[in-house]
Image (cartoon, rainbow, N blue to C red; front, side, top):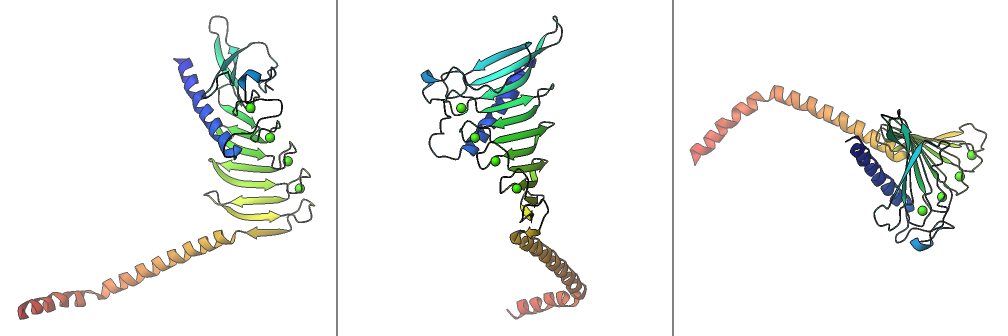
Length: 257
Ligand SMILES: [Ca+2]
Ligand SMILES: [Ca+2]
Ligand SMILES: [Ca+2]
Ligand SMILES: [Ca+2]
């Protein structure tokens, strides 16, 4: 029973990883092949560049072929926990060769409760990790990306309740952030602080004009609605005489017919 639950959870994660990889791949058609890999499964390298390297011997490894693969491309590593009588497997690492070239390109590490802790991916299959995700209580809180293919993160995104909350970028790739971005509650860019001369201090704040316009528009609509409600209440207060007069004229009209 317990094992079934674990299987279900890991399959759900498999879907999430594949969806993520599909998003990041970008290319229409076939995904690129990592140097040293091959799209011909009979020519897969003997070294699959495993990232589930565990400095422990009390582990069990399971290899399976995922959808569309004729050779195993998914590896799960379990720790064996408990005493001899109550030994159980606990998922600690899972890695996938998502473009089926014989080289693992996405890995997830799990905590003692089998909740994801970290995920690293080579989303453009150039052989270098370019995406680092941090999870807290199973939710993504940080996504770091390498946008210039130097193997180092230069775009850091922070999430609150799965919504992008703030980010920072290193646009001259010196390792230090020089743009800081703040997002609205719906995850839309609201304003950016820009360090023009790369001295570590914000020189100017840019605000998203579209967001400001939308905020002003919403405020004006609220104001208009309030005015309309006020006018309508005032009209209602003076209305009875005219309303009262209407039936009479209707009656009169009817009477003339
Ligand atoms: Ca691969
Ligand atoms: Ca890469
Ligand atoms: Ca970089
Ligand atoms: Ca910089």
